[in-house]
Image 1 (cartoon, rainbow, N blue to C red):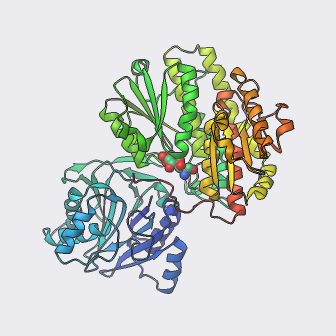
Image 2 (image 1 turned 90 degrees about the vertical axis):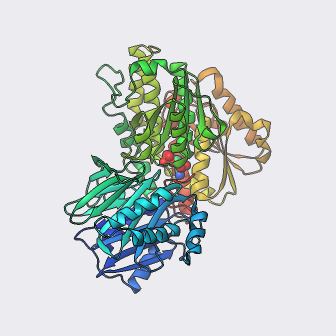
Image 3 (image 1 turned 60 degrees about the horizontal axis):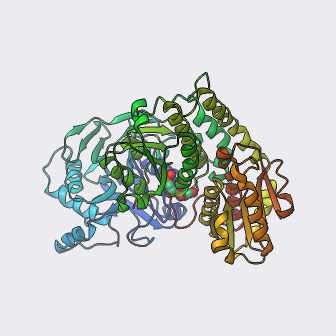
Length: 620
Ligand code: M6R
């Protein structure tokens, strides 16, 4: 949610900042803006709409060459997506520029205070108040080094809510100052140059050396003196260093039309990478990075899985596997609801938070609530150095590499794999599974990359079907057992990418109401469990297909190889390889990803940047 870029160093800041914005545009694309300081003058240009609009303006009115600059791509919260609400925001005298991600919750009171002092606001945003307060604190501050950083600390102490702020001033042409509270910010360190970014994608083509900023910290970067970090009170803090383990190429489209297509294709490798190094020589699991002792894991008597969107669907599937393997009760909740209903948590509760980005505010707030209640928190996360793993007691990283498309694909499949690993590990530690049982499931996990590759190699018919379905008004998804969350995920993908009304149902619930919406020709996609699944749930789903077909539905059936029972009732049959029931979502989800992507493409939509969305949702 909002991309933030900053640069100071010998290169032309205009190019570095624009390149960073291109890489971060997936975080928000309501507007874009850039400010540079050259020859003691601050110049800013901003434009509503995608970055391309800003680039057009810059082609007509180029900025001066500069060695310091900041840039922003916006996902609007306060104030519509207009030119005037685009960032950077400038102080009244035009000498200080600020970009902001997050929400300043007490902005109304602060704005009233600034207006009472005679400041005229030029936008409807909460962010602009930071520019005016910063300019005032700068004016009031003592002469000398770190004046802008001192002013930033003064301002941050007054702000409520979540924010990343980056500021530059015409009076300090070699200094960038940034601050963060509950909102992402990383520093890139190159050779005599420094970068700021909402995530490392902003500077990955320049350096892989990064510094992580903690909660309530301010970083001052002087081109010649280097960087220093303090808390909001001004106490020095040592930032954590790390090296980014992927390169610029990983964040490029690599010949695909869309990032989403590339990320779908990368799934076999992403799953293999997520399994890598976690399987011992005898098939046992080795999860050294989970910093919870065996004793702590044996103490767990209840598990909550908390996440949002697609990650929540991964949690719903995790419940089936973890309960089956460990017999520990598992509840799954959307993070935005979790803390507001006062869940029963204590020291014996394990809260598993799942987040691809590691920055989702709803999930972060749920995590903090769980920790306040003394529960232990284990994060499943993809983005190294992000806030959620940093604040959790333990972390299991997925190794999906950068996920740029707003719709999560490889992030989801690797979250599933990580959930399986956690469930099996708990079963192993608690003696619920013998070594050979763990080894057998591990062997099945090892087959998943090939199974997904096989699904991907047979997607031509799904693409053809997508073209036929592109004009549908509504598409329904049905599943049972682990197929139910897959149905939810299929519907979410279609909604977010193709803007088609879609709903996922537990197939058995259909007859309790939803079947009324089935009409002649309504496409109904059914995820069929394996015929080997428990308690003949397979047979029941086959009956459900017949029920909707009898009411005129066009049935699109996803079933495993060799399942002949579905053949008479499938208008379209999509085959997936035989996979153990609990692991089946890893393969059955893939055709739904491809379908949604292709329908959106056929409808001429922007697959990677769907309307109204942003990749990482850093506001509540
Ligand atoms: O980064 P996170 O996994 O925490 O993100 C959670 C959701 O915002 C995310 O999965 C969202 O639903 C995706 N756009 C779905 O494709």
